[in-house]
Image (cartoon, rainbow, N blue to C red; front, side, top):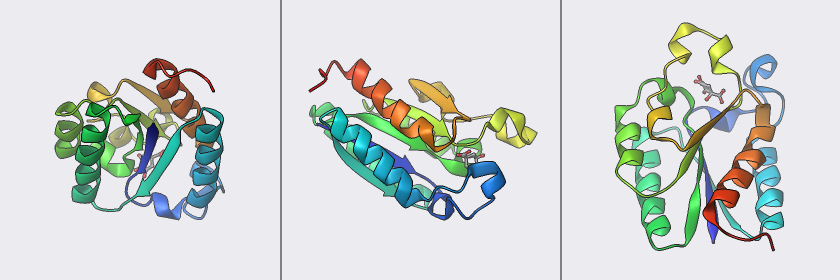
Length: 152
Ligand code: DQA
């Protein structure tokens, strides 16, 4: 079975964009962390990033079908700034059977007020916030544990 790790707008710049807030690890390094964790758990990994809201919605729908068919255990989703703006992403997640863990590298609650509200949290199974890039493998573990899959 697979796990999806999905990253939204500007996360392709991870490691160079505001390293004092997001750290200096690149998205490619995050992918390597996730791949190592997925391998430990006997899972396949799909790792995707897009700056476009419509593309993210298409992938969520696609993996919704994968989850329904029993081939995907869930998604770790960092929606970037769409967290705070996107009713469309909220609706996409609400309409499918894919368990989604919302993730933010930074602690959005210590930052500007406009980052305190999330359209995604009400439709997520849980959130990982402010643990840096190490939140990604933790979220993969949490999805694995709740999927009923056994450790290999
Ligand atoms: C972010 C937090 C968002 O507020 C911001 O727009 C991002 C990244 C995070 O990972 O901390 O792009 O999702």
